[in-house]
Amino acid sequence: MSETRSPRETFHALLDGITAGRFTELAALYAEDIVVETPLEPGGPGRFEGRKVLAERFAQLGEQSPLELSARNVVVRETGDPEVIVAEWDYEVRHRTTGRRLTAANIQVLRVRDGLIVHSRDFHDHLALAVLTGTLPQLVAALEAE
Image 1 (cartoon, rainbow, N blue to C red):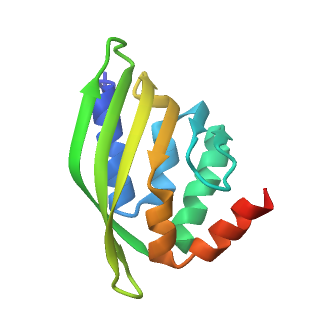
Image 2 (cartoon, rainbow, N blue to C red; image 1 turned 180 degrees about the vertical axis):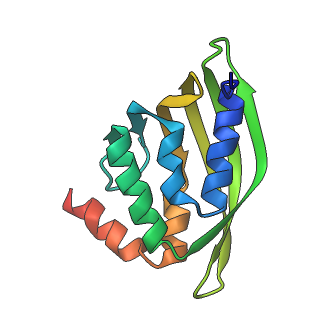
């Protein structure tokens, strides 16, 4: 009988997969009925429902991303709810084409049940990433159009 990953272990598996660029494997860490909320994502939908939708999003990110990510300053906080953790970390980001670098802060509040993420609230520094990738003008235009 295999042992189920703890919320902390599940988060670390997610972070390891992201930093290794294994985007096609990430959806397996989420429950079928996952809800991911991205309240601070400018111009974005702010909410993704279902493993299939998330798998498509990860596949798209993996194909298009010119970014190399390394996690630093990782802190995982336990809460009074054994299913919920709060993870804080920085990505050291390098643009593969331009060589430009920056640090982007991140926070995730994860609910993990039976080793799978069932709910996630993600707070990432989208502005810093838009500056690094040169997509800030498109981001501003999208926000102005809203």
